[in-house]
Image (cartoon, rainbow, N blue to C red; front, top):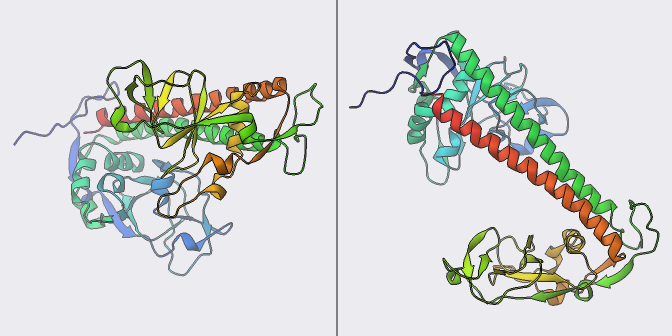
Length: 388
């Protein structure tokens, strides 16, 4: 059997000695969270962590809690420094994720394995070790179940934990905590920008029964005109399928999410908006460049002369396509239905001003999204190299 390595591929300067190895049962005490479900959450009350948070809002170190409940008897309250691991989840890979509860007096709900490390192990380091490297791979193998997988304290106790001296543990833990804080910072900025866009879509377009918006660029005073979608845009369908995608061709071919190949079929000669008209994601919108093709589960909405493309997209983003869905098993929407939706439309010049504003906002949102993706890849790359 090949000897397992004793040091990580990448480590901080000044550390050269081999890491130790011990069974986690010798390095920590174990317990379980008590009771509670999503239905017990309240707007205010005692702070609580449920196992679902480790899937929906994962952080290596949980410093703040924004979920609350009415405290029950026999609840488990954190002391600060516990490492929590979900006891159940959907997949083997997803269930093996550990977080540190940094604060005391936080209720820890059911379906949480709770690990309280002793003086030999830094909590941040232990959470990272469980979630990465050899320990992660071994625990993934132990996670059992079909529709729902489980991992128990007994599985965690048997895990062989590689660890360096405490000073190196703390340095690794602090380093990854800083990365997580940077990721959280970008997540918050991204969320604020998305919320801002939603607010602007509401305020920069007239409300029902009104002819001017609440917020408007300086110099524009005329009432907006009511026009149906089929008066400001045309609709085109496609007969192409995923099977028609070629490795070579004159035009790029897209599905709802990405470039899938090429086609020699005639395409649209101007930028256009695709809408998912069948199946999952019905009503979802996307802008595609001219001289590209799209598959048959999409439709193309093309602005008429004098209509700004981004302004038209904003109108569509304000549309409730759910009210136009036909079909229970496989949902469909048809332009013959939502094409009758009435919008308020300003002059072309004002449309263009609004369009530029939302293009710039979308660019900011996309930049933060890309930064988030880069940071997460950076963290993943380091995780693979800094743990045994």
